Amino acid sequence: MIEARGLTKRYGSTLAVDDLSFTVNAGRITGFLGPNGAGKSTTMRMMLGLDNPTSGQVRFDGRYYRDLEQPLHTVGALLEAGWRHPGRSARNHLRWIAASNGIPDSRVDEVLDVVGLTSVATKRAGGFSLGMLQRLGIASALLGDPQVLLFDEPVNGLDPEGIHWIRQLMHALAEQGRTVFVSSHLLSEMAQTAQDLVVIGKGKLIYQGTTEDFVERATEDRVRVRSPHLPVLREALERAGTVFTAIEDDSALDVSGMSSDQLGELAFTEGATLHELSPHRGSLEQAFMQLTGDSVEYAAHDPGTATAAANEAQAQS
Ligand SMILES: Nc1ncnc2c1ncn2[C@@H]1O[C@H](COP(=O)(O)OP(=O)(O)OP(=O)(O)O)[C@@H](O)[C@H]1O
Image 1: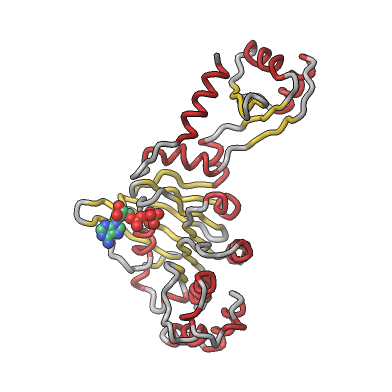
Image 2 (image 1 turned 90 degrees about the vertical axis):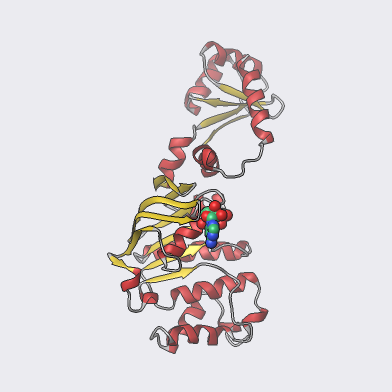
């Protein structure tokens, strides 16, 4: 378990992290999300004692990082891929970290196997691809067999097979009862991986809880309906005062506030043939945009917003 309490970091006039408190539970994968510049990396660096907080503290299973005699046995972290001693082999790189943490060489071969680098263990890390370097970074995080793992953007540079692999690895680590805290900008990936979320914006906590609640809170379920008798359905929905949006050049409607059962029955009553009737759940991406909208440092105009608003207005008229 990780407990952050009142974490604050000021760089001159920039308040990068602002009185941030959250708890990350063991046995779950917790996603750490926030727009660019929200303070995620700064928070992770403070968690690992790489940056001193202006105030506040973090405890790992009840202990402060500075009190850990051999931190790798408690917390493993993948902070930044790309670092390596170019002339050193993967195995020697890990042996060097292991030796300075009282970890036996036999563990090095175990973690090389876990991350799938055994066949290149004697190759110089200087020639590794970004994906291989991510795996090497994960191997060093696992060296001390820690109960807590912090991964900063772990799928960066990985191909689809690599992304699938890391997803499986994180699930396996959580199922073993470990605490897995992972930051990522890939929201569709996080939606599949993270059971819980800590979401921050401009250094402040926006949300802490399950991924499901986050999506439910910020989005509305819709039902998509496609029919050769769309005008009939439109009229019936307007009479019922139901909100809907015309999409795909008026060939379909997205209907809110009605279940697919209710919409199917309405279509039957109106004698409208249906070619599609599909419920659509809100996405993590929609929820993230909705709830972090005010915290984005550099917002660009979204061309889709204008179109959606125009459609909505047209549908309502
Ligand atoms: N060493 C530093 N000196 C001054 N300002 C900094 C420093 N490190 C970070 N900041 C500022 O602190 C804020 C938070 O930055 P941080 O890198 O932690 O955000 P982030 O959420 O990790 O962003 P990203 O998603 O872009 O990686 C930003 O405004 C950043 O410019």
